[in-house]
Image 1 (tube, rainbow, N blue to C red):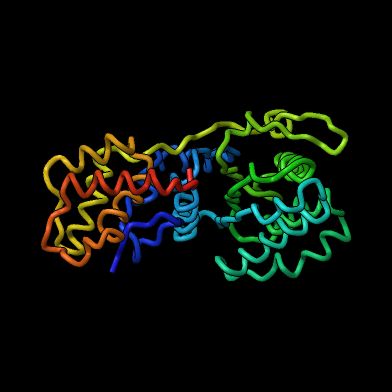
Image 2 (cartoon, rainbow, N blue to C red):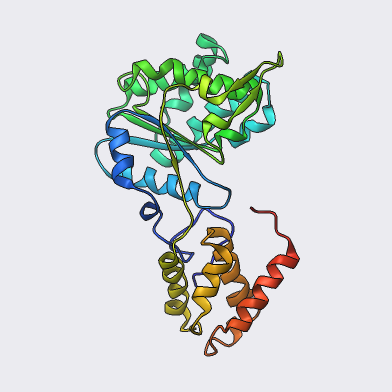
Length: 295
């Protein structure tokens, strides 16, 4: 049985969902990729960024024009300013995900050689360059949680991508999308020598920043209609308006209210009974009292 989810990414066969690619302008995304642009997607936490990136990867790989790879760089956060440790983690995740999502084991076979040839400050650029040269299609790299990185590790990541940028697409990814909570212009990076570097200066090849917004009221209604279709349980008049009023369409809140009212409050024992305004108001109070920190 499907359910509301508050711990993405969304899996459409398990969760009620709004189609991820319907939440942003896919024509603009495809144009930016076709034009070989490097750009940013940013939005607050728990809005569906990762779900959208995974959906974009799947769509691009289903076509014949690009090889797309999703990479979450957050594991390198613990390295902080240790570039050697941070880059080994990032390069390792690139290789791991190439094998997992694409069935491509070549990047994993090149890791040690890239560090011997280029060191930690050039290994990522080296790996991406070699992969771009040997792959049959231009590469689109989707980097998630970039603003979780700290200090010189983040500086090195941005500068290695910037250094490879002129070689695209023959010897570097055609497009790199950086995703995080903040726009890159708002990054304030403290290097080991206490120099403060802004993200915009470390990555001045960004052509555009896109922001992923909240659900519309129509989206909220469509999401909750999936619960009715799945279980037969309906919502009283006015409940949908109340949900949108209380959440402003923030995706985590929309799903959390639905899960609380429809599953946690034992409404699932009485699917023939509608979800009333009283039930939804109580669900709201329970969320407030629980003080979840997701957002």
